[in-house]
Image 1 (cartoon, rainbow, N blue to C red):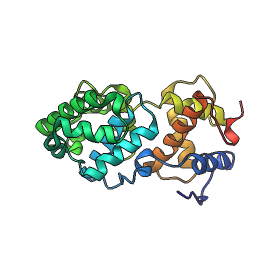
Image 2 (image 1 turned 135 degrees about the vertical axis):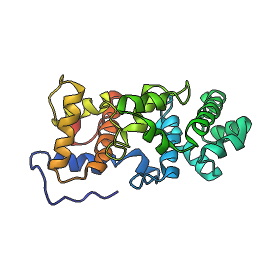
Image 3 (image 1 turned 135 degrees about the horizontal axis):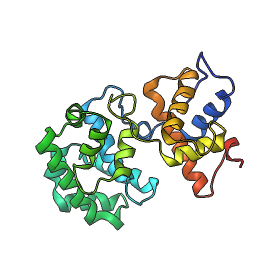
Image 4 (image 1 turned 60 degrees about the horizontal axis):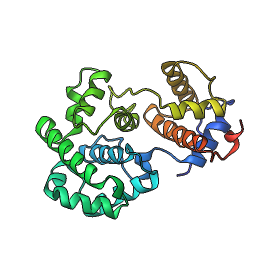
Length: 238
């Protein structure tokens, strides 16, 4: 993805933000070719499946490869999940390299999608519409199945921030770490304040509110690299 200098920029943050985006890329959904801007139910579901896969203790590479196997198999709706069945899901997961969690994840996917179909007709937008606020939204996402915890819910809702009006997950600690390393914010400030500050910086850079997920995902990737001791780029200096 190519990032161009927008018309309005906060000059002090411009080089850092653009360098981060150029190095790390945009949102995880965009990398997978998922288009969330229109909030089409099928696209939101694709991202939900990806978030479930990314939420396990498995590498981003394997989770991405496994999602591609679901895409190639055409198993990208709640009903198709159920029609594929447990054994079929295990085969898809194994082809993607999800072997460590294949049985457990196949069971989890069947449970989640049964609930999604029974309670919301398989439409995650209906889940959002039913939620009273951001807290209830997160609760409803996690209530789809016991395999969905705060980490998976956070991954899913993070890239719907600015698109779903009630999507307001906390700032990822990894993003906060990276933002501090980049000099975009001071360390030790409360997560809500850190998120608000980053959103202001993004908007001051002339970027659309709905694309904040690109910034947050780039920060998460940079935070992961820092945590693993593989930080790169001009923001990697301590």
